[in-house]
Image (cartoon, rainbow, N blue to C red):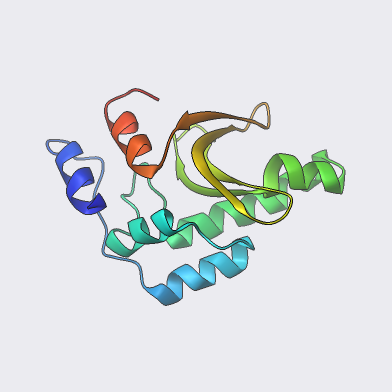
Length: 145
């Protein structure tokens, strides 16, 4: 489903390239590092394409971005504030300018799957941009987000 959708949306572009599917082991390792279970729609996306080298992050890139955020941002916040403003998200795509598309993880540890948010790195704030991953992919590749 995702592979076909993205393939159609990137036709004629040389900057995005669908990658091989991600293994279950790679997804599990990424979840362990991030500290949250990925929603099924994200797992399904990774099972079809492990990123697109442009907008959608691979499992390895998800880990690397979280690692970078955990190294850079804690010094700017109190621990609770860091958790709320930086670390309580599952980042899976980027706009290339330092902002991420993500799921918000609630204080009880459950992932809010009712929306996809953009996490803006200058403000450390989020706003809803899509209903789900499919909606985000369509909006992104049609320059609507």
